[in-house]
Image 1 (cartoon, helix red, strand yellow):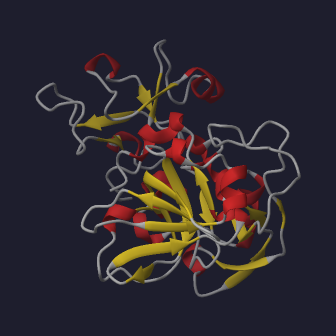
Image 2 (tube, rainbow, N blue to C red):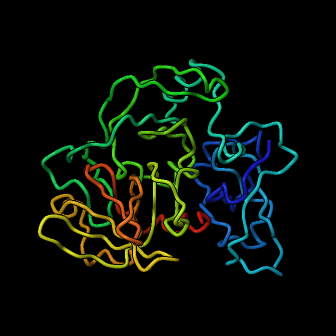
Length: 304
């Protein structure tokens, strides 16, 4: 299968010898150190593995003639293991393929596929369950069971199956964001399930021709302003004077979003609108947006 460049956000680096097909994969996931393409150096060659299928990876390019900070660098699967299936090998915009309803159900049970039927309208509890980093604390209710939802899956995209869903939040996506990046999601108004990493839409990709469909946007906060009714979260954007994200004050307070959040990354699921020639979005539900914990920001480097 052809795979997209920059699909693999990080590799698992094993300092001790580990052999695919021989050694226990649990050891890889427990002891492997997450390494982005920028963090790779030649001492790691032959010791990096896919976080999903566990087969060996290579970094392209892997020579010292190209800076390790180059945004063109990426990880890829080795041809030797081309027959090993991996959801990170699928073409970026075709979505995830499931042979049948049973396979989709199994993926849901294995927690590699999540159907989000709606975003939580209000916080799931009366407690301050989000910490200063933007993550749910240990006792938080991250999502609730939703209704069975009709989803077009994979090779049978013309057919829809009723699958169990969650009523969730972008904050839940941001918790263990590194693991969620490689899971399949069907978000509200999605056509079909895709990897979370393929859904991420950098607001710097917005042009005057970008349509208004719902997307999972991300960007860096550049300013914050309180209004009488709404707040405005300003997000740094190229090609326009500014980008405005309108939010509700009580939700911002609960999420610890304020002037101290300037410089942080934010994710939000919304449709694009225009205020004259200024792009803007509104988040009306509590679950539609979240700060990304800073420890995961490096994983956004390749999402142009």
